[in-house]
Amino acid sequence: MKRVLKTMIMTVLMFSMFLTTVMAMDVWEVRFNGEVSPSQSRWLANAYQEAEENQADAVYLILDTLGGRVDSALEMSKTISSMDTIVLVDGGAISAGALMALSGSEMYMTAGSTIGGAEPQIGGERADEKTVSVWSAELASQAEKNGRDPLIARAMADDAIVIEGLVEEGKLLTLTAEEALKYEMTDGIYRSELDLRADKNLNIIGSSGKTTINYVTDFLTTAAVSTVLLMIGIAGILIELFTPGFGIPGGIGIAALGLYFGGGILAGISGWEAALLFIIGLALLLVEVFIIPGFGIAGVLGLAALFGSIFLSTPDPSTAVQSLVIAIIGAAVLIFIVFRFTPGRKVFKRLVLDMEETPEKGYVAAKQGLASLIGKQGIAKTTLRPSGTAEFDDAFVDVVTSGEYIEEGTPIIVTNVEGMRVIVKQTKGVDVGAD
Image 1: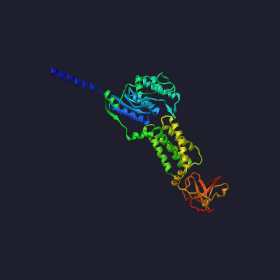
Image 2: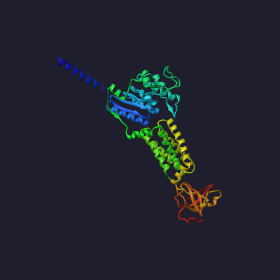
Image 3: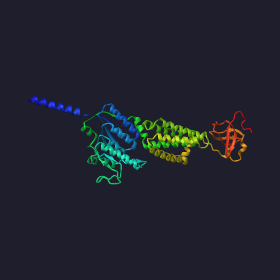
Image 4: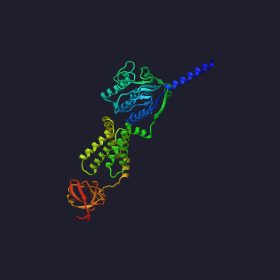
């Protein structure tokens, strides 16, 4: 009898162990935190691809975010819906993060977590009614698909929705974990992630981590950092155009723009064509400034190419316009500060050759009645590209070429005088200074 009882107990234990093993769910762990951005969206898609390649039963998504870009959140929602996903909100699923949480086939929360506050905004202001309508409809759709109240989901994005006893007009809905459980917006509350894992018998077969490149890309493509990089890039290039030689401002500007476009390329927001278009635009502006006098078709095409590159490096026109306007205003302020205040002027005096063109040193400005200089031969006292200073009969005069580049010390001759413009060209084999 004892032997039979012992056999039965062993059988039950073995059967229980077998059931436990059978009922365990193989999951692929993905921890998402930080800003909802294009680079994060691309990383999440790669993580889900890894989960599928490793034949995971589901993705275990641990979520903590204050939100970010609407377009990126929509892409992430599609990714999350592409595979069975157990979402655990461990901290917050705010703004765009609410859509990610509601997209999970199962959604749980840790005590003290929150979800909601998902009004779409552009430039810190509430988006237009069309955008709000589309966004709230997407929240409702994901909630309804996974057995949750679509009206409550809408109220998270649209402050015009009133739910008696829960949210009044003019207020966005944000739920605590306890409120979310009460209104069946979450499938349960756990003290910690470990409690959920044990209760649901989740067997983690692998996880998707981030590389240094991922972290760098996330940082470069955040809305604030990318706009600052664009601002510094524009300011650096413009300061370089207004100062002789090539120095630190141009280097900083090019480096900032390199990071701006490089981040977009690494994040998959844009391709090399955006950077190439920016380089073409910059080259056209340089041609307009240094080779072709005035402002004509090269300048117009250059500006169009620059603006076009910014539009190509952002996911939508509204974001491009917002970033460009902020960057231009910021660049203007930065340029003013650099040239207006003494510290900035002193810095640039160290970067470039400083030569005062005073009457005591023999300099005279070109003026009306200088037609007598036509045919006069002299020497370039500075590099002409195309403007600079020349010496005629021991007097220094501001001159300009017709577009060609003339090195310092090269013999020149005055070909024409147009108002205050003394136009010269290079001449060879002449006795400099002869009439």
